Image (cartoon, rainbow, N blue to C red; front, side):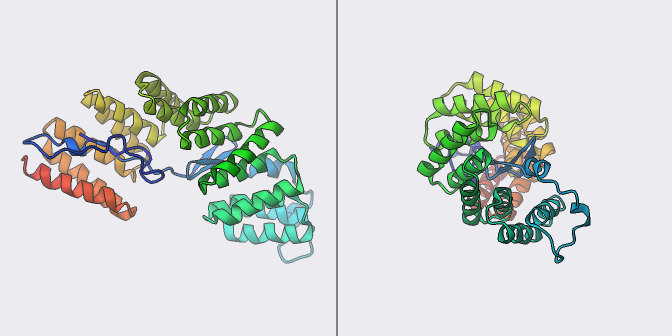
Length: 337
């Protein structure tokens, strides 16, 4: 059986493309698990967006607090730092569009205020304006050529846009400026992973883990690399490490479940899928995986129940490919009852 792979929504990678016809009670073509949709994670001093880590704005807030900020009212006369800090407060309040306007006003008042460009880039990235984000990060590096975080975020934005060569250049520059910048090593690991250089990716993820021990994502992606190398023991340990750092890491629970499923440890796999669903109730892959376990255990009614839930979630998330796969699997399970 084929389980959906962990990164369906990003890379559409498939563990095993081979699908065989259903044979009596065997459903081998559906035991590939779909991959997970990366959520927005607030980490230590990082933001995870679309799988790429971006340094978070509180770092700049600490550096640019203005004594008169609490009295500042947008629309009144203020200096660039006032508008920068106002934008940071708006970000923390979830008012991203207003924050963008405040950062832009800060830049109009002081075009060389690198943190304003930098935080504008983060805000644009948060609303999905990837090209605008990359431009803002680039302008931050022009304003301050030694701004390592800006280079790391620019590299991350270019990586997300699949501009691998430039992403590499800017990430290398970030690491040259600050060898202890975990976000730069993490994004470099993602770049190497995209380039199918898992050995180098693992080294980058290990370094990111050393520098940012409270961030589970490097361990998770290191586990993915180990799986690509068929190093299952190391992959399991990496996923377990990610879960230890963040017990609510749905994708890590799910990935651990896929290993257990392939090892025919169905009870343990079901427990892992349940934990994934508990961590994120909208995580369709977890329900699909549970459905496959129930099929193996011949609990067809339970299988249909969770598969229907998975299908509905796939449809709501516009993942029609796996919605269709799930519907077909449900039809085949009906014939087994």
